[in-house]
Image (spheres, rainbow, N blue to C red):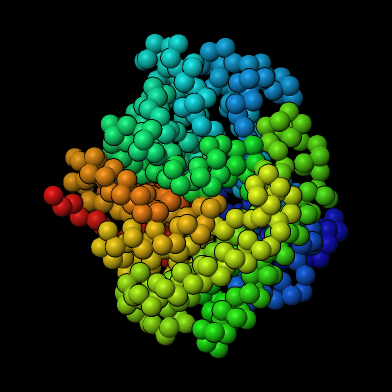
Length: 514
């Protein structure tokens, strides 16, 4: 790609015209696509010839972050600053009531960047809003929260937008659950930080019931994650775990199946192919962070930094991984996924060995500008993109169609989640009977977390709001896309690709048993 000359080359002009003429894109979706296209008119300043070859081979992927990373991919503000000091730049005082609190948050959200154009983290809302909710009459507080959530769904229409609640039972969290069930919105995504010592069984069951009906909240293993990150962590975007007041600079990934196809055998993969491409990936992350920190002006000028909402050294680089299942199956010459990873001890053991190798490589690599999160980057079980199809299953998940019985599936997940401090999780589809006994589902989640599962998501098979790979879409909106109509939620387009190419909505349905 050539450096910016002030005139789009014919290929880019064609791409811009394709965006402008695309009848399925809303105006704002066109704007976001055009802004990404504009960013990419800058030459790939963080890519050298060696890395470009690896990207052309399909082994290294930058997840469309752009050629000139001028802002972090994931920004995780400390929203409590707004409630302690207000915001000088936006001329916001400390909120005095629930209406003002919600309004101030909505104003601030408009100024939180990400690589996708929308904020990926909206805060630990139950903690932030509980003092204001408790001062209100319940029905009035609920009405305010309904309007607040409706605004988010319509004005920040992207399923990577995320809210956290828990681990404690609060009036605000209960109202959010009520509104979520009644409104059936795909935005925002929600996570419950679950700790069986802090989260009552009754409240956990309410969350499980809501999850079955609306695909949210997911359950995060608060005991496990707090040991790694401390209490001041956030779940953002799909299942990303990051430091509050920090975030993720960049998420680049290695496609393990594509790497395995370049290996002569297992030993060649472990000793040569994997170390080579992991080195390239880590150096790529270094260069992106260095450019963002030292050449882009974001961390020098943005009011979020100046007013303490974010701290640069609390950001980290995210080392994405996909396709472990297909990688080990290829290396072991297993052609039937039902006889491979997730269902085969040799395949699972090789998968663990590969994760151990990657983990050591990441730990031995000094990170750039991440001194307050241990000075190293974090492995991330990336949830995949539509282009992956069925050749690189998300993260370390078992391929769709090859899932074992639920207890075996969860035990398998527990072997791998520990390697991914910046996020790993699995999704399960349940038949409708589970809605009558959400307590039984809580028991399963509690047991899986005790084994080492990091993040648990689910929904019932006939839900309209469903979880694709980590984000949420509505089946009714997928149907609109199929008819060539526009949809508000930009993630729905990604969901259609995952549905059609990766069969992401064809997961095994877990039957209810007494």
